[in-house]
Length: 131
Image (cartoon, rainbow, N blue to C red):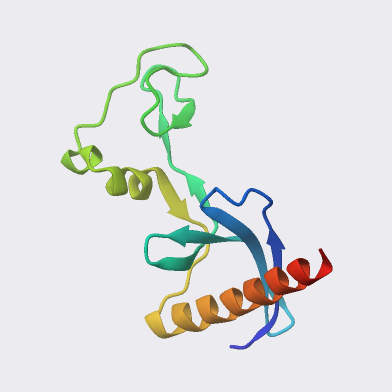
């Protein structure tokens, strides 16, 4: 599978960790949008598009975001999870979000990240030369 196009939209706030969003086209026939370019402690990396995990209300069945205290539909107090990993900050993010699309192999993840970060650097250089 080849990446036939990688577009990057820079974010304006220089002090934030989120640097850009990327849209990647595979084999001129499949698109993945909202891949994030993030500045981490060890440099730039990509985060795949994700959605927040939901939990049903035991009273009315309405699906609320994980770790909500009250139901958004009936205002019933929701049971709090007893997962021991929830006390770790990094585990909280992983438990609250689930990837919509993601690479299966490490080799493809590295290829995807390399192409997106190259497109990010090109877009950043293009914008800085226009100023």
